[in-house]
View 1 (cartoon, rainbow over the protein chains, first blue to last red):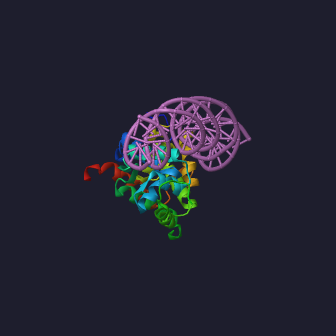
View 2: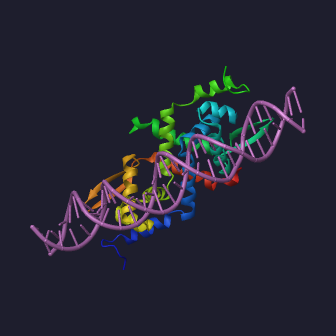
View 3: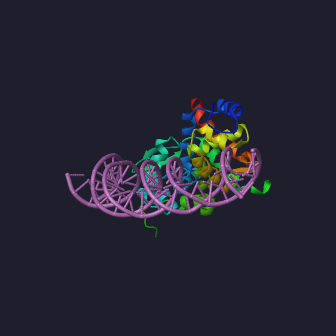
Length: 116
Length: 116
DNA sequence: TTATCATATGAATAGTTAATCACATGAAAG
DNA sequence: CTTTCATGTGATTAACTATTCATATGATAA
């Protein structure tokens, strides 16, 4: 009854059964999408080292203040960073260590190519 | 001598010193970019469970065969999956377990929100 | 209150990208 | 060798996204 010619109905049903929900898989790709931008990765990596104000991040990246602010907003909206005000400055910091873990896993993948 | 008004030159220099190279950070965001697409995440997650032919993946995702092939090419070009021919079919499988680790870390981040 | 520093934000633009369509290739069955 | 199944791929298009520019907000100092 399926439209395809060769049969793999059983396998497909089994795999489908073990798959997370569509919604979760979308959330997952949305999460990785956040890390898939050079500016944001640089910001996150910088925040591994220290809490930083917008001005410092801007100087670090050599990007415009506006671009940095826009990306910080995205990171904050997705709860990857948090901010606090100190006088005139806004200090940003990593929201939690999951972020660090995820990025370090990616880093390992890039740097441990010899192991295969 | 810097152009900004308030001073954080020392901190910026320290953080910059600990930062990976621009090239590595770009590679890193490029890697995450791969995971930042629903179709590709679904393909990868499906391959966690079993090696699959293009036709099976297509049926699993409910996407077009062409779309699946395009995304498989991207995954293969980036060494995240490998393929072998079996008669008329191409069987795809995960290239290595780094992929699994990275995605599971992301999964944890999404599902372990209670822990904070 | 006015001026200045620090950051945020809306609109516009340019670049990127994923899906579709049409078709090409490649293997095997007849 | 022709047909059919299975997959790959170039071109086009529509949607998305990151930056820039201009300006707004918010805090402090004068």
